[in-house]
Length: 116
Image (tube, helix red, strand yellow):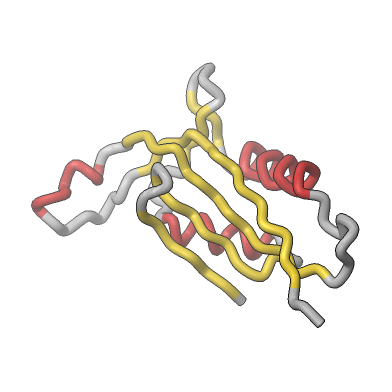
């Protein structure tokens, strides 16, 4: 018997900043800056025939984000404000209780992974 997961990936353009940055070498992070946030989530399944349909789940994640966070201008970009990757992942796991983990990376380079 296998353990199975469906994995979704969303790419979300957004601004954020680190309001309380105390590191002089990266103090520019206090100001809003843009990233493409790569959001990956894992959903445990027991059925091999689309128990969680990837396209549908990706759309639900995107719909949630564009409802939970404000859009910036006309560019379809979100504003995560002072939220870190850890905070965004935690928010997503709180909302999608059927997800077993969430990874949020800035420009697909560095970020955070949270799991239940």
